[in-house]
Image (cartoon, rainbow, N blue to C red; front, top):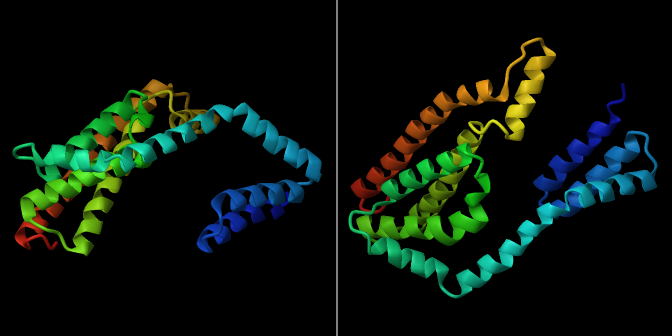
Length: 225
């Protein structure tokens, strides 16, 4: 068995570490992996083209980016801030806790693309969390502002990661099923999904506690956590 094709993984790691263009890094790594795996250049390019053509529907998501950019240009973030400022009793902790539950539940029923960093966190959740923190604790220092934005992004990550495994048709569940089956443990995707529920509940409690604790620390320090 030849380990030379694994050089492609090293190229990806090095390219990302040096902050080269991600698309260029992945493309070069794919070509190098194919060549070191014994393929000619033309078959490698053909394989890349076939993979792109088979999954061309993925490129449709790029249409969302100009739409979000236009919405932000015409005041989407400002409207989100204004909305949360008008809600009585709204705090950053409560807002992110609510979004965490929403993200987990929607991911658990297969709607994992309903949220996300570009389409939800950046234009809506992050400015709303920032506005809620300022409403409760006054003007934030720059470091605290960055932590609030980071906490909003982390909430989306945690909600998606621990919610999607409850959906039995997700790729990760099918991968786990295949691994168990190869070792002689036949399990259905539904059985695996059920056992993901306790993990999701623990993730909600733990991250929800982190969010509320961070909100309290902001309050105790007058806007400085």
